[in-house]
Length: 413
Image 1 (cartoon, rainbow, N blue to C red):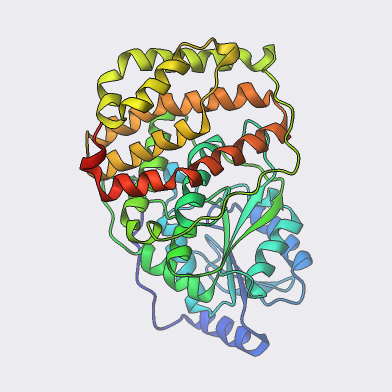
Image 2 (cartoon, rainbow, N blue to C red):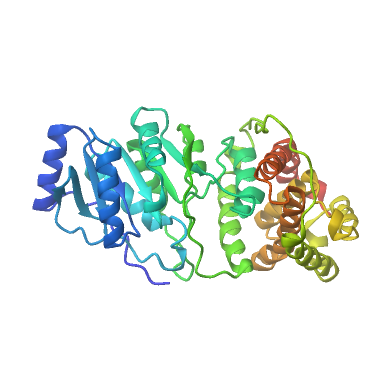
């Protein structure tokens, strides 16, 4: 994937930028909103909404092609020199954070919002809440929690949220945010992290801002952002997507091991009332059956790889659930947590080729999804309960990964 070079922040501003900075200084530090994926139509929509939703703030809107700083409807529009977003347009990547952080430093922004694809679908209340959390000093990093259905954001529910909560102690349900707001000091942190070199042959690296904030002892706050259109990746191949996302998270966990081995995670708060357990109806049961069949085939064909990664107790647990009929299929939360932790450790130790390792995780992830869909049967309350139940298991099993990380030979499968 080709991208334009990431440049260092410039010391000298252009005449247009100098005028914009002078104007900002006269009315207070600006609130910077970056739209790296904006179309002309999106810019006009967002400019009008922000002028209405964020009245009283000195608003700067950075968009691709906004080359000359100019003000309209109380919003100053400036250029966002975004790199090509390529296949990662569904998520914020290193260049997005780097450019936004550079602009935040250049314009001395009090707070910065980076809004991803389909930003116009973000509610006015969500936009306001993200900005105010940082502007009022309640957070250095504010990440949204959208209202999602039982079938949405399953990679986050199964893997990203439980791991981030257990290891970094922050209950961010979407730790790979589509939108984010951050303070001036968080901007400097992101600028430093995003500037680290990456392999030119690989896609632009993902940044995990929640983990970066945690290791810096910055304040993180999850914001109820209401409903939002969630853009889908152009490449729908699950193996590729899961390897990219989970591989990036595993690598970040490896790099921050000294932090998370000491950090204590609060147990996630479950919904007040446990919903009644139900079974899937016909409209989605065929999907569940297909995922269960995929897991059973993998159990037969991936024994050699799994036996290098998982201890006998976990393999026995997988054997039991592989024999269950689809109507009763369930992945125990504690088994899932230990399995994921074993894969994190195998990634760290390079027990097998990392590509093969992440590919061997996919059918296990599908087993969790099948269990989730069967149990929630399309009910949002039941789905939410099961997600929190999963996250709680990762917290309870954290001593397992800490022990295995420190003394891997003692726990060899």
